[in-house]
Amino acid sequence: MISQFGVLAYQVGPDGEPRFMLITSRRTKRWVIPRGNPIRGLSPPQSAAQEAYEEAGITGVVSRQAIGSYQYQKIRGNGAAVPAEVQVFPLRTTVQSDHWPERHQRDTGWFTRHDAAAAVDEAGLKELILGFVPPAAGASRVSTGLLSAPPPPPARSRVLRLFTAIMPRENSFFEMFARHSETLVSGADAMGAMFSGQGGIEECCARIKDYEHQADAVTRDVLLAVRRSFRTPFDPSATSRLISSMDDAIDEMRRTAKAIMLYEVKSFAPQMCEMAALAGQAARLVAEGVPLLRAVGRNSAQLDRITENIVHVEGAADDLHEQGLKTLFQTFGEDRPMAFFIGHEVYNHLERVLDRFEDVANEIQGIVIKHA
Image 1 (cartoon, rainbow, N blue to C red):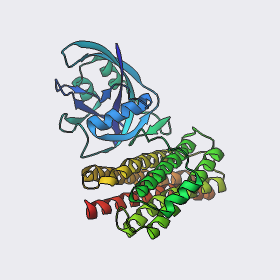
Image 2: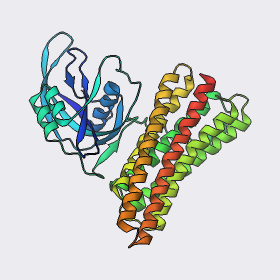
Image 3: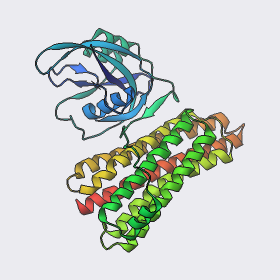
Image 4: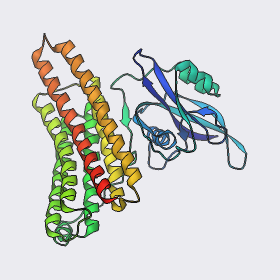
């Protein structure tokens, strides 16, 4: 029996009831959930979420804990049937892209609980759908997007960094963009760990500070190279604006961490945790897009999809910001004004983090428009 990972993609409607996305299989066109084999270098929930993007174009927040498993007969290319067991992870969907790898091979659709259970064939999957309860806000989850961030490059010697700055090549700009995007992912992961309770507050704030310093060093290298180079990948102003917008994003993460330390915040509202998770998703989308800038014309469609997703993520964060402030006021507005003020500050800092990622998306889109 082969092992696979899949997602039960859902959204919660105004009535509190979940609706589920199903997709059609490529061979038989019957309704199934996104699922696939383990992906090297990714955890089980990350593998499942990657399949969800490739097969249905959806991204969101996937739970680390599986809700169960079911079995089915997988038909191989030679017609042989092989038993397969699928571990299923809930994925709260925030974005469905207009472009994804298998969009021309499958149909997608949203179903109510009972319609979804009736549409699928596997008895075990029917039971999972009928018994599904959305995970509690703030539960153990990971954001999706670019799920397998590239490993950090080997540390460069100071001499090599100085040589790169003195003799900048066009390729060195892309290398520096990639290094900066890695600090964005690392900083967002540290922030997400802090809000989700996966890491200590002081420890995570220190990590964010360290990543922000690393990002500052890369930004200085890029801006210095722009002044010294006769050839930049885009016009000098666009190159400077892109790296500056990326730096603004991690600067806002640092400001968020500083506010949390200043006001000695010890716990976070569910909407805050969701916004922090979305920041991780936005950071991974930026890290996915930056390497594609090496060939803007060839990759323009992918870059359009990535920037569109970042804008959608920022919009989802805006909704959480409004919901969180309303709940905050209802809870503390009259009786505990200082608690309301502190919570308001944290929400505003988180909103600005997502706003800065939208700025990065706008800069990338501007480059696409001008250079594609």
